[in-house]
Length: 175
Image (cartoon, rainbow, N blue to C red; front, side):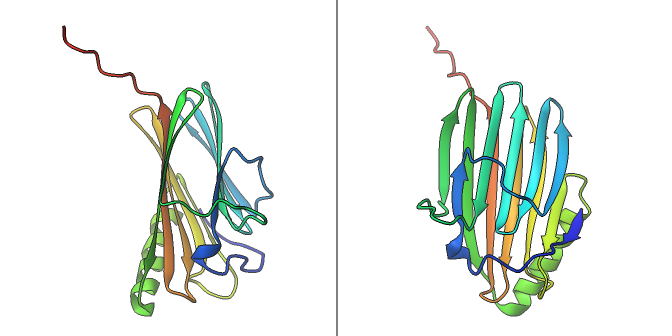
């Protein structure tokens, strides 16, 4: 699903993004509710990037990547945590692309996400390449999502990927 976000472009640069786990739902400009087997997932586009809410029989999980006033947790390159009965893994990277390459990559990502039944993308007013996009799936009992945050003025594309699933048992030792 592709939408135009009726708000000013809040994120000014990739360095302004922060990461938080466990925050309450923030006001959203657009949402997509998904049922992925026994998991309910809500993809949320915020005025300041994204939030994902996961509700499953094992509990709930909330991930926020946004410009968060007063946050002291910058966007990490990677996080691995145990959250209740889940394993949570998060990774982020920032790509810096020349203008022509950036525009092409932006168009590819928007086409991929907007045509996908588990995708949500929002374009900010003022630039067709200023967007936040999200894509979710369930694979082998785990929920995965990817996001992209585009900053055309700097040629920066922030890509994140998250995996949430049941804790894996330690392999049995041979006697």
